[in-house]
Length: 587
Picture 1 (spheres, rainbow, N blue to C red):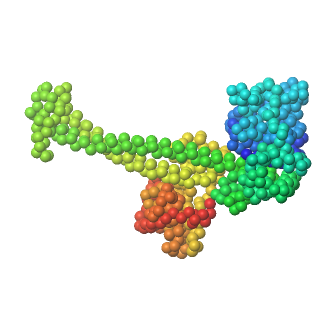
Picture 2 (picture 1 turned 180 degrees about the vertical axis):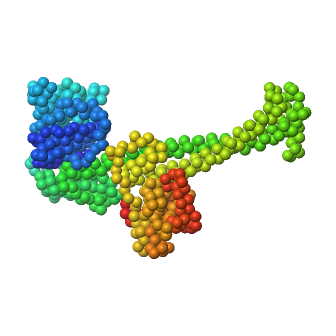
Picture 3 (picture 1 turned 45 degrees about the vertical axis):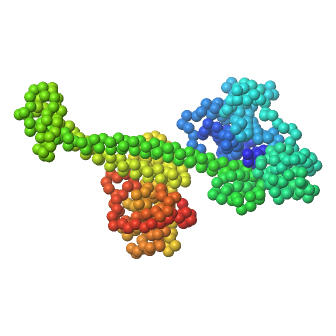
C-alpha cells in the first residue's frame, strides 16, 4: 500500500510540529463503522485527527473535512468517550518505521485517579485496527478495539478485552533506510540475488511502499524491473545517492506527490517526487503529509460514497421502473378483456327482445340478433327472471365500459410515469457529484417516490447550477443536470426567442440556446444538438434525432411531472454525440 511507514513517519512529525502534544480531547466521533475522529484543542486551535481501519483506506492524519455522524454514537465511540474525553495528549509515537501509531493520553478514571490510556492505530491493510488500551504495572492491556480478533480470526495474535497487548510480529532483519549507514544499506541490497531490485527493496527495507521501491529502481537503473544480479557499481552509486535524496525529502517535507491517471482518478502518492510513469500519470503536490492523505483518501472516499449513493439510487429507480412496467402489463391485459364487452350488450338485447318467448327453467336462449341477423345462443341463470338476466348482462357491459375508460387513463399515466422514471434514471446515471445525487433525491421525495426522511436536510449540498457552454460563434448554451433544472431552465429562465432542444423520444437533458436579438445560428443549433445527444440516454449512439423549437412553443401542462413538457412547431436534426465538445462544457 502507498501509505508506508516512512510516510507515517512524516505524518507523526507534522503532528508533533503542529503542537498537538499537550492538547486536550474536545470531542470524539465515529462517522462510520471503521473510522473515528478525535478533536484536540491545543493553543486555542481545534485539530481533528482521523483514524481509519478500513481495509481500502486505512490511515492516520489530521483532517479538515466535515464528516456526517450517526444520530446515535456506536458502542466503540461511547467507550472512547468514556475513557478518553478531556484527556491530555502526552505523546505520539511510532515504532521505527512500522505502520503503528500510538497516541498516549493522561485521563481521569471513574474514581478520580489519573491514568494513562493509549489509542493505537495499526495501519495494515485488511488487518488494520484501532485499539484502546490502559497502562497498568508497566504493560498495556486491551480495553477494547474497533475490530475484535479472536482465535478463529487469527491464530497468531488475539485482540480482545483484558489481554496484554502484543505488537504484530516484526521482521528484525529489515533495515531502516533513514538511519542506517551506507554500508548497511548496500549490504542489504546485495542480498537480493535472483530477485528484481524493486521487489527486493520492499523485503529488505523497513517502511517503504512498492511505488517508492520502483522509483529507486527507476532512478538507479532506468528500469523498474531491473534485477539485483545485473547491477553495476554505477547502479549502486546512483541508488545510494537516491536514498540520500529520499532522506532529505523526509526531513524537509517538501516533496509530497499525488499521482492520478489521465482520467483524473487518484492512483498513488509518495513523500517525494515520482518520475517512473513519465506522461502516463498526472502529477500534483501537497503542502504536507497530512494534507496529502486528507486530499487523496478524502476524495476517493467521497467519490466512493457518491458512487454508492448513485448505485443505490439507480437500483431503486430500476425496481420502480420494473414494478410500474409489470403493473402496466396487467392493466393492458385487463383492457383487452374490456374489448369483449359488446358480447354482453348483445346478450342483454337478445334477452330483452325475446322475454315473451322465455319459460321458467330455461338454461339458454337461442334467438336472432336483430343488429346482425345472426342466430346466437345466450346462457341464462335459472335463478333469475328473464328481465333480471337481461339486466345482469347490461350491468356487466357497463362495468367493462367504465373499466375501459379507467384503464385507458391508468395506462396513459403509467406510460408517462415510465418516461419520467427513465428520465430520472438517465440523470442519475450521468451524475458526477453528491450535489447532483442529492438534488435528484429531493425531486423524488417531492414526488413521493422516496420517503422525505431519507433525504438528510443537514447534509444537503448546495445544488450545482446548470452546465454552461459557449458555441464557436459565441452563443450561450445551458444544459440541465436533472428534471428540476430542466423545468427551471425551460419554464422560468428561457425567453420566448430562445431555442429549446431535446432528444426525440429519448430521456435526456433540456438544452437552451440564448438568442441574440432573436437570432440563433445554424452552427449553434448543431453544436447544442450534439450536446443534447451526449447528455441523454442515447450518449453512445450515432445519428441521434434531436427536436428543437423556440421556447414560445414549449408548454408545461398543469400537474405534469418534473421535466415533462409538450411542444409544437419543431424541427428535427440528426447528430452524433460529441464527447470532445462536451469536454468544453463548464461543469
